[in-house]
Image 1 (tube, rainbow, N blue to C red):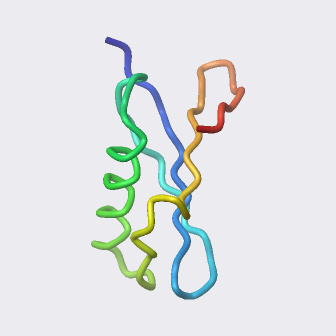
Image 2 (cartoon, rainbow, N blue to C red):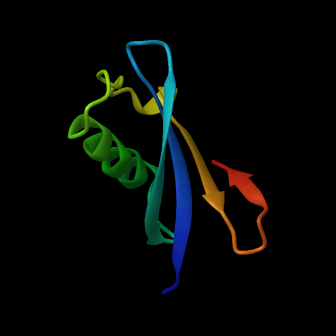
Length: 70
């Protein structure tokens, strides 16, 4: 199974979006990608991110540089 790189954008209470790079299998579930990014954000120094799955933007970044939105 090949690994992929994903960008997960989380909305925070300060009105900003924080984007995290998550490495996971190409067939990873969007919810797993979301929680991986959210826990990374929650452990950092930034304002609290909303824990709403529907508010997140998740994109797979392919090797060719093109992006696919989920």
